[in-house]
Amino acid sequence: MTWADRLRAIRVDVTPLRTSRDFRLLFWAGTVFYLGGMVSYVAVPFQVYRLTGSNIAVGAIGAVELVPLLVFGLYGGALADHVDRRRLLVLTGVAQVVLTAGLAANAFLAEPRVWVIFVLAGLLAAAGALQRPSREALMPRTVRHDEIPAANALTSLGMQVGLLLGPTIGGLLVSLVGIGWCFVVDVAGLLVATLLFAGMRAYPHQEETTPPSLQGIREGVRYALRRRDLLGTYLVDITAMLLAFPVVLFPALAEKVFARPELLGPLYTAETVGALLATALSGWTARVHHHGRAIVLAASAYGLCIAAAGLSPSWGLLLLFLTLAGAADMMSGVFRGIVWNQTIPERMRGRLAGIEMLSYSFGPLGGQVRAGVVADLWSVRGSIVSGGVACVVGVVATAAWLRDFWEYDVRTDEHAQAEREARVARGEAAPDDGRAEAP
Image (cartoon, rainbow, N blue to C red; front, side, top):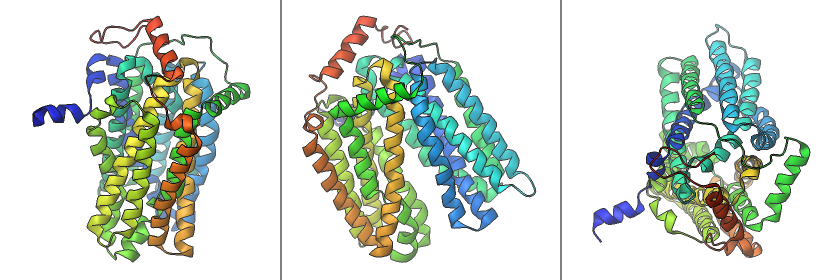
């Protein structure tokens, strides 16, 4: 095998971008969405700090966004399993355009209002939480069943591009032309993403739907808890982020540990760079069948890399291990997404995507609290190293407890087989006709 053949075997598989028009629309909409969103992500806390001079006020933004995220994430999942998902994407996109335009208008005032920023930030969190389950539930419908791993990797790749470039663009706009233009760029991105959503064809529900209600939400939670393979994906992610998420300590690392303030930017981007590289070289993931083991190994590698970063004597090694940690975390995320998209039945995808949002949100938020408390009681390095070691122990313990998760094999798992057979029974379009499956 030549080096060219080896490279083709590991690079990201772009087949879904060639075979499915609607996946292309989703991919570009998601990429533009994250790019614009990360520009605002830089602008909002900077503007609040400039207006108030208070770190507490900046931290309060997260608190204001958390409750809408949790409440509307669950409700948005239930809604996505009942209404037209494409229409929900468009309506919530329009809402985000209007709300972000409000942030822009406020920023251009001679005296911007802090309370307006908080109100609009909370409403934007609600709109985003309503939208995301529909976006994630639609993705498997736009591609063939055997293309789901590649589509999942490509979706992650687009997200990482936005996460990497967005903060850089936001920082340049803040310094060169002002905060208001950050929101203008975000409005443009949201508008483009919404138009791309509107260009998709309709994907009507293929089974009887459950009206959005507490009963429907409880049904989704019971389904997630009953399936120990799914439960393992959620618990591993929560465990890794809760115990090893180090981002809150980056300012202290730059200022106090290494006395190099210029390190702050590279610290924030190192994991994203690793995630981007790992996704670009993710072609090999399609040949993995034991996804539970892959998730456990990747999450354990993340913990080891975080611990090594905390022990690093030089800033070069620190950035290297953070980059490797980002790559490991992304691989864990890719395999979690494959399990979800290949095994969750169509009628449950929205609600399970809402539950997935909770695991994404709770772990990092709790991890910031843990890291900060341990750093104040012990040391910055001690917090990072102990978190990485605890992550490995917690992930291994989770795998030992949930044997069904560790032994998961997509070739024999009953849920994967059922979903595969259901899609075959519904009939899938040919890979070159621009569509993924018949409605």
